[in-house]
Length: 411
Image 1 (cartoon, rainbow, N blue to C red):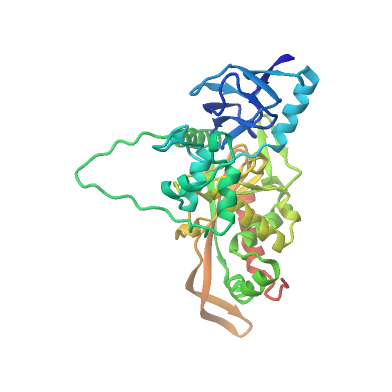
Image 2: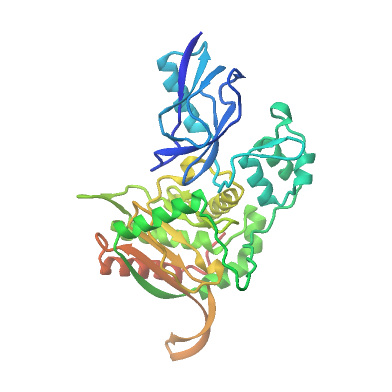
């Protein structure tokens, strides 16, 4: 038997530390490799961490509330597997396979009146699925001491529980009263990142109005057949992403990052899409190599990432590596907006709501007035490295790709 110090594994790009929420085991407990032993929180994701070795937990080196750096020791495990080479290999493998989720956590643990433990992951999934406390208490658990695991509750949902419709909840206005609300950890992190992005990048915005009539008509015509053939809904989002990816190929200097005094032109087109969570926060899963997917596969990828983002099932690599980001603010009924750039990217695009408007239509017989489905696209970009010509031409290229959509396109 030898003792090894288990290290805090990598949590994702640009994450250098995390907050310890709760130990799921006690000192002296026996564990198997990959058993979930610790809950932690970062500014991007919250997750349970699995043990790097089979053996006995000898001592905790961090406590709930501590901030631990990535790669720092968090506990001592007495294990027969322990030698330095094996330790590094196991940790690397664990980092690749460990599932992580995104959620805002107000408190590290929850117990009902009967003393049953629920992890933040389980509580978040229950909230998303509309599972109340009584229903939650009735579910059998496969974990230690009848603990309900993430796999238990997801299996329960998959067995037939109807997916909850995502909606924001309106707040009640109390006239004549001031209410003090403490910013939670995630809101504090978002605040810091937004201020930092505005400090780093001088933001400039360009706008175009795009005629989406052909796309709207095409989608309305094929959406039922598309679902029957591919078992996926076709929304506007994959069509927008496809248009952006095509424009990036024409203007690759929009797909860059800055490390002063260097500009890094990225070799992959990895498009992040902002997804709104039920608590009002946003998370940005990334579609890697977005230019390489045919539209049906892109639709499947978009639907899958959006669904898992809202049920806290994203993996770390699905939040990493973005080179350009889009935000479909039209889903909130907004006609235009100027989003803040996600560092270290240099641009972000917002798509407004599609509205029927009177418009001038040019024909060989002359100009006509007709009803068209119009959308405003806004493009925010870092004026340090993206000049107005590039920023304006890029958003115009995206618009042109959408307006020239092939209405006879096969599905």
